[in-house]
Image (cartoon, rainbow, N blue to C red; front, side, top):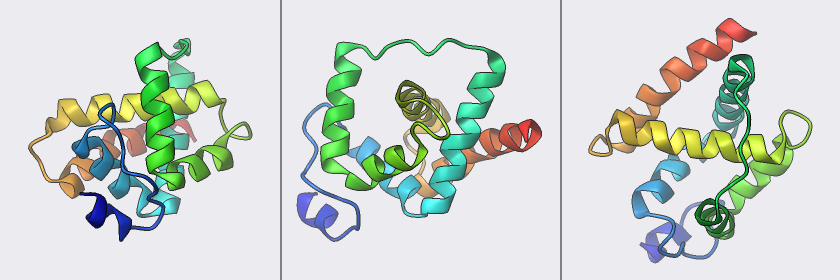
Length: 132
């Protein structure tokens, strides 16, 4: 996996055990199109903001995972710095990130990444469009 990952832009060190291979591949798919990734994160953040849901602090496990995924995927860190704080807080960014992972799991980890990404983006994009 590390040899495969090294060929992808925005990929740094191999993730540790707190970052699953499926999570890594899913995020590679999301980050492959920078404009899509920005729209997805901004739209998801708008939906959460409209719901008025508080942004809880990260758990210890989530903090460790966040540090590891940032190390393994510099493109995610770059996206974070482009979006925070001008479009959302750092806590909101991670809330969106973990929300996307949770929704991906509910969509079905057995689907291929492109299909899961399409399934996930549909409701989020529709909700974000309605919010604009």
